[in-house]
Image 1 (cartoon, rainbow, N blue to C red):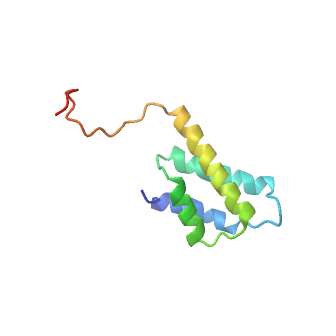
Image 2 (tube, one colour):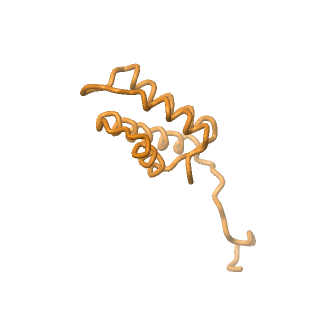
Image 3 (cartoon, rainbow, N blue to C red):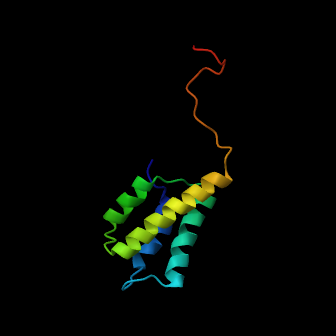
Length: 99
């Protein structure tokens, strides 16, 4: 799965975050709200996609990169827990047997 255009647009707002040691509350809020918006709009992501995005956008500050990944993990887990009834792909014919 690759990131959708709308997800990439939201993530690109995070490239402006810069810090010298710790993130401020505004920066942290921006990261959290970004991932909430991605998930609430119906888009999904894999953590590998976020890691690739970080690499391709040269987010080299380890504090920022680590926080983005932590929030991505947390928001995804929280979203999945709140939405337990997801459609699962089933390759069977639907009869319940071994077709």
